[in-house]
Image (cartoon, rainbow, N blue to C red; front, side):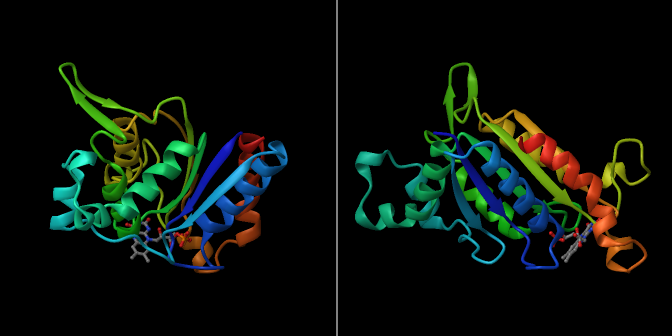
Amino acid sequence: MPTLLHLDSSPRGERSVSRQLTRDFAAAWKQAHPGGEIIYRDLGHNPVPFVSEIFIAAAFTPPDGLSPELHAAIAVSNELVAELQTATEYLFGVPMYNFSVPAAFKAYIDQIVRVGQTFTVGESGYKGLLTDRKATIITSSGGVYRAGSPAAPYNLQEPWIRTIFGFIGITDLDFIVADGLTEVELGKRDREQYLKPIREQIAALAA
Ligand SMILES: Cc1cc2nc3c(=O)[nH]c(=O)nc-3n(C[C@H](O)[C@H](O)[C@H](O)COP(=O)(O)O)c2cc1C
């Protein structure tokens, strides 16, 4: 069954542009996949824990050697990894924060990049395990960082997302970029008019 893992990482609610756009994508996806299932995770409002010393010990202990305490330390991580393994497609809403990603999204990545679970290390090096899955990343930012623009070198968001997802095997990525939002926030551009072409792009992609 097609299964979409839909994740939001903006702490904002109705004002959030990335949330609004992932919601549009999920609705279009559901129409295109009437029998499909959507798993939803709201990192912006329900962040996952930071990794801790006991988490690290547990993550590097073989499953059959885990004490109840170690097992508990990676219970959330196991749940998050299981969602990624179950899903056949991913949808992530990720605002740009300080040229990178919100801490809630980074905390999620720290929970899911796990040896033996989402990547392996062998004689030929690292191998990502979440292959054959497509991801759509919807980013939002106040400024504009597209290739060729003066601020492009400051964009540590998209290259990092590509690198870390590639590391765990997710290489089929589509980015939908809602940038230049400062003008919308300041009321210099109408939000609905701004969103219209992006929504059309989303409808085409989700279908
Ligand atoms: C803490 C914080 C840091 C931000 N850092 C940047 C930044 O480095 N570059 C940028 O263009 N916009 C930055 N912004 C603006 C957000 O990317 C923009 O408001 C975006 O729409 C937020 O996503 P959301 O609408 O889904 O909440 C920042 C906003 C906040 C609250």
